[in-house]
Length: 377
Ligand SMILES: Cc1ncc(COP(=O)(O)O)c(C=O)c1O
Image 1 (spheres, protein in one colour):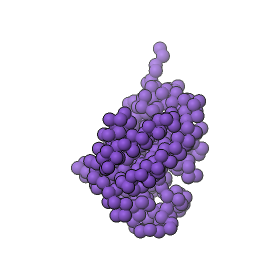
Image 2 (image 1 turned 135 degrees about the horizontal axis):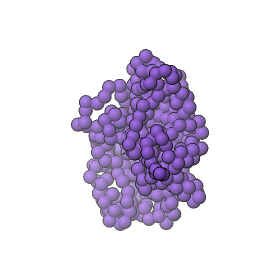
Image 3 (image 1 turned 90 degrees about the vertical axis):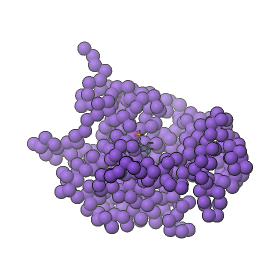
Image 4 (image 1 turned 60 degrees about the horizontal axis):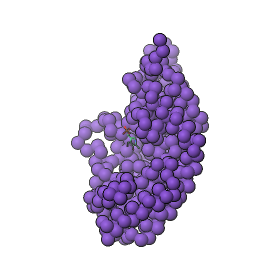
């Protein structure tokens, strides 16, 4: 009898094929774990870190650092790592050992108008590490570009310094690519713009472009080996099961998704159309005083709406939503940050399909132009 799927431990042909294709795109990474959502993919990393704390660090290095304004999912473990207070509100008490580090949005600099904001924001992470004690910290979890927290592209110098800090204090680096992974930024992964070497990468949304529920947790041989130190110990491996993680449909859809991206040169298209979108948005910023800041990478852009460019006073949340509704009425779907950060849910979010043409991009920004005129005059 042929079975399409039995259990994760048994594997299946599309899952093995896709894992192989995926790690070919991720130099330095070798091991792929499947699950069904971004939250679960991130939870797996947190579980690995906690297990390593027990096995390797005598109970130390169990704390998980996350960044203000980042988001990592909806289950209690990952909500404890939510840098978006409105997402976590009313779901506590949260598990212990999750510590926030400051955001890196220069437009809302915590240190005034400084030259080296990227370095300063990374140093702020180091300050938290020193305050908590490096021997207590196992993981730093970051989005490559903060998505739902307002489309924040980390500033110049940030990533290199972050990598240096992780190495200095023996802290594993986890990049949450649930939004950016598999092409959104014009490279396979957002972190690949910055020459960094993560210990974990998680991904979900773009893996099968919504045709199947699939997420991946990818790690290195070094991390994998850390779990195999004692063959006589029945607990000496990463113990994690998932009823449907890696079941056949997800990897089959992900294989086809990757084939299309390659055959149709969609990474190049993303970069080219991203440049066009950026240009159009900057032109809109010239025209509409309400656009305080424009930021993004590849085909992922945000426009932050403010009622006063000098004070940067955010517009009320319902006004951003009115812009989204006006665009919808014109047949264009855009997003806006919502229920994330009290008083700061004011960034329009654009993530057009990677197959978008110049005509599509212009249609999107034309609709935003009309919607902004209608809502703000
Ligand atoms: C950056 C990031 N990580 C994790 C998640 C959680 O993924 P899921 O909703 O598939 O559990 C999301 C969801 O939007 C996300 O934006």
